[in-house]
Length: 470
Ligand code: ADP
Ligand code: MG
Image (cartoon, rainbow, N blue to C red):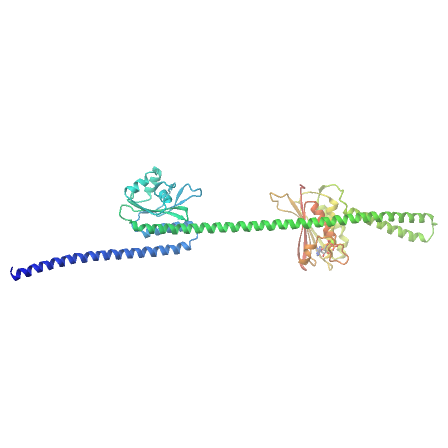
């Protein structure tokens, strides 16, 4: 072989090697490009997932969350023709399409169709070609019609599905369809669709827990309010009981005192009578005897009044006109008012119905409260008496209110709890019985007395009385 031939052979070998190396380099380059594009894709997906995390963290409603997840699913898997998010209903029987990239109404059941299979599946799945078709088989024609209307290509060649679940609790499923491209999705997409579904489930779970916590808190507040109300009622009842007991004691005491005084009183009156009989007509002692008899008579009347005051009333209940009683009471104190320079005004409503009551007792109540009002205005002032019909609530009987307002000194807050206690008085000559007896009478009538007062502005006593006695 000549030298030239040898050289030619070596050149041919070198050329082949070069060609092989070129092919190899091209392969390596392609591989590198592929790796690069995967890295870019991975990066894009990770940052998408991160931004979804951030958005879900601040989402306040289920609607916002599901819409966001569907939007991001389409974004995260380019080429997707439809994305559906189903949530299970309260009784865990129906999956309802709650968000979709095209408007549609689809209902399935757990296990039925792709959404139903995803719901029951422990993890994300990739279905391709015949797998998709067989998963669609158990759906009704109606469901298929709704489903196919919501996407451009039917039947879809591939689908990614994932359950929405948190710690064994299932909320729904996420399904995305790949249209005509059978190789659109890849098994390496599975962790991403599952991550999206998990984020969605966690966000919904969080929201549910928050709602439940708020409900529990509301329940707790309600229970606390009810408890406080019950306690307040109990306290009032106890206070009333105590007051009645004190009044009863006062009543008993005065009845027995009256009884004790009556006997010696009658003896004294009789003795005086006998002395009088024996005196000559013009005896000057007669004047003194008359005075003594008169005063003893007064004591006898006071005793009777005292006894009757506390004795349970024998008076019959009768239909009573509160306005008339008030007019009579005002007439009774007319002179007293004039002397005290108090202007009285009455604003009596014609709308109030008759009430079933002991007229005498109520008159006593009105008198007590009006006289207190006068005492509160030592330098004169305005007394206003008003009647009104209270807005009837369905569960309570119709009630009338009698307001007695003065422009007097007012009641300091620290005195208020004691007003209705027997013997509680701030007056030098007070008995402290007026309000105690009034409250007793009003309670016996099924009503109550309210007080509003402002220092140096005045006081309003409101007597509330039901118009029917149950
Ligand atoms: P009394 O009139 O004998 O003092 P009450 O039971 O009638 O007894 O009243 C109790 C106390 O309530 C009074 O001493 C007074 O301090 C207060 N009070 C009642 N009504 C009024 C009023 N209209 N304005 C200011 N204080 C009042
Ligand atoms: Mg009084």
